[in-house]
Image (cartoon, rainbow, N blue to C red; front, side):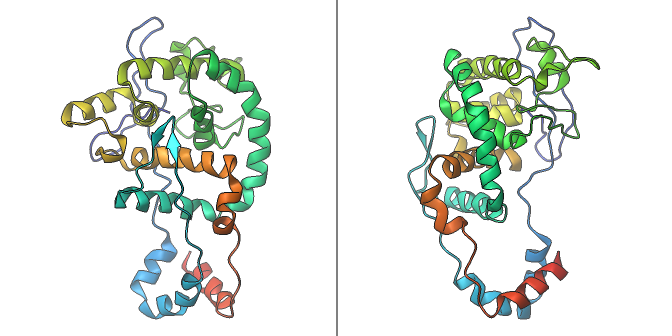
Length: 276
């Protein structure tokens, strides 16, 4: 999904060129970031006595294994503290939903055999198969409040610019093969302009125009060190999370499994329910 954002506020504009234009369309306007601080955490910050009660549970929490991770051959730089913090953050958020991993894996097993040959045809790396998981959780009828739809969350104007039919009677954004072809054409053009697959993923979220402007302001082309909107800053981490938990779940099973219960947990759960 390509998103237009100003530096501070979230914009909801979409400017898609007509079919045949050399400019790249934006896929859909921005969504509110999914990476937020929970109300329960805020409450615990204000109430030290509750934090103290929760301390025993936190002590027993397993550590996230920091394994070698890469996106299209570009390594996740886990030698950088802020990168490690973001990686742990997306895993912490996903951990509470890890019970859904089985159904997500079933959807992926049906979805990947359809899109993988299309990715190969357009010479898009395999890791982009995880973009639709971050976009739509592989819900075939997913529609955002902004109007983006389908596995790849394409906006209507963008979909039309990429050759898809979108009308009240026909919406090819929900056709997995046709929508994947359109997304691959878009990704291929992005790579021809940006020359880095991590930057392509970021541009899919923030929009190519935003990424080009950022590149003009920096002396490097490193996604992990760029100043980006919050959602884009975490976007590639979310994609990589899906890659990791689906491609080697056993390596993360100890972290994603439910915590061992202690005598403190029933009371802690009551506090968190009241706080949420």
